[in-house]
Length: 162
Image (cartoon, rainbow, N blue to C red; front, side):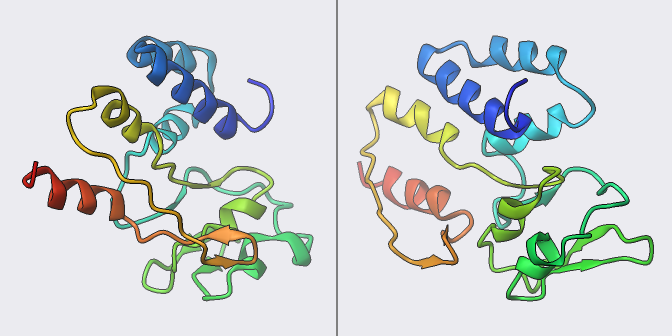
């Protein structure tokens, strides 16, 4: 897979969602992939804990974090990224604001941010439920903040009205 495997998987899932052949594409992606591909598919398709945005999919290589200016731990303004005794990244969920900056700077794609676009494709195609666009202009160091689970909350609250 070209580029970052995670970004490429996300693009493929979006395209297959519009085509209507996502289950087949997921099988194909997993067959072509490696040990973390299943996790990439999971989070790129919007699955995972609805109250979290950033997920660790594998341990970091030994040289990870050598560049103190561009590592996940240094990028987190909230102190949510720490290292254990072996040097592996640990996400302190109580401190995590969900900004995704750590995933943005992770060169190894060991940390990924959950994408919430793929689940919306079916709603957009279905056209039986009104879909509203929310534009959020709150930026911090180039990352956009969204309340985790916000999409599900809007859908649940509005589905009964129509």
